[in-house]
Length: 338
Ligand code: ADP
Image (cartoon, rainbow, N blue to C red; front, side, top):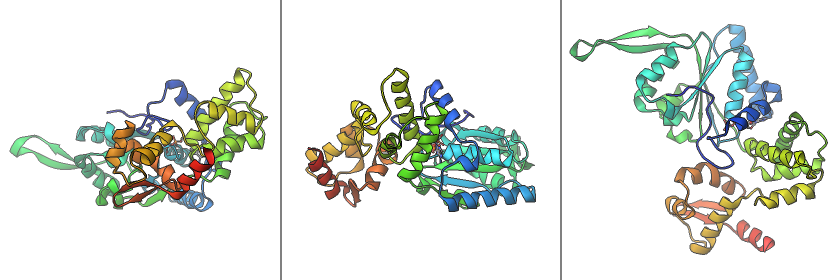
């Protein structure tokens, strides 16, 4: 079992297995207060009201479930909530909680009002979910005392806490678990203008405040509407600037992106490989997800959670009952770039 600040599950631009220095610099770019967090105004208002109400009532915040693709800010917003509530936060992830004793020891070690953040909550095992039901609803857990026929179940109180669950797969969550969350919140991909705000802030935190708006926009346009990718590109440009390469304007930045294979739509080598296979090997016909994953040499979950959400969103592929298929928009894009 691991309790720590957790990361999602796929290598690439939205990777879980980050290097120590990357995690440290990510922490420094992570906004700490709700007013620094770029989000739709209504969602922010809704969350802010829930936080203020919990504080006035002197009760823990209702449990919250966040769902959206990796890299869009679930961990960040959970940390902000803890900060705004003045509460401690413990972070873990669904696959890290292996045994019932793991979840019992996490729950019994919480302090009053503490936040428990469980990333990839859809990957919790059913026996562990069951313990969460009464923990979430009544702040109680059932503990078995003794063994064999003499075993009895005893209810034990645990501190009142807030569970923040994060998932990229809402549909994989069992209904009883989903129903116990007082708030279920979805975040969509970010608008280019919002990403530009995040990028500007990150550049200035990294000591680069002289960038032109055009350069900021060129990063925003390539970041697949995802802050984690935006921050990664910001750090790459920072590295170029550190070794004396100019990054003052759009053209200079674009040349750098071209150099490492990211085009003006933010498509990278993996996206293009997938699209080319759909177009050439399958002649534009629909292809099942597992076939597609095996021809590009990636796991199905990588294609589903990391690659295709953006390709679907920009309209380069579509889902049909028989599989994924390229669209006219992709064909137009190909004609333009040839
Ligand atoms: P997730 O948990 O959804 O995978 P994270 O919370 O780890 O994503 O966010 C990834 C990076 O993007 C972090 O470095 C964070 O600083 C930045 N980030 C995410 N959302 C926002 C936001 N709304 N405003 C500013 N920065 C953000």
